[in-house]
Length: 118
Image 1 (spheres, rainbow, N blue to C red):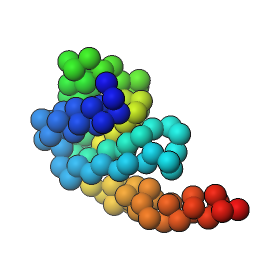
Image 2: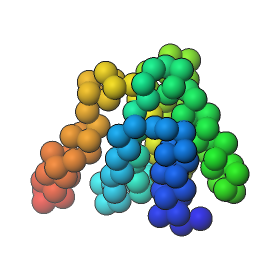
Image 3: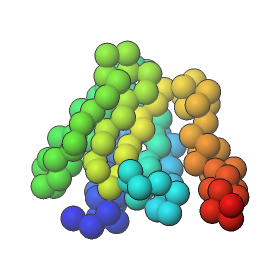
Image 4: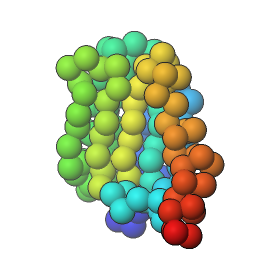
């Protein structure tokens, strides 16, 4: 699968699992660890875990085995590593607190651009 196909398949899996507020960030050129980051919200720890489990199963059903899953013990923030796509499934409070959209948004781009210029 291409990174774009992995991204689209993951989004479909998240939607099927009833994840909320799904956002995709294209981080190519900002990091070497992945091409896309997907953020999604679950309503409780049980919902976050269920979304993660369903996403893993959905990806396996579509011939893409995740590299790993982290954070299911507390389920405040579960990361599903799909190699070219890293999916962050978070409870609403954690999502607001960590604000990954802002971290990987314009401010980080400005930092990266400054460091490239010297």
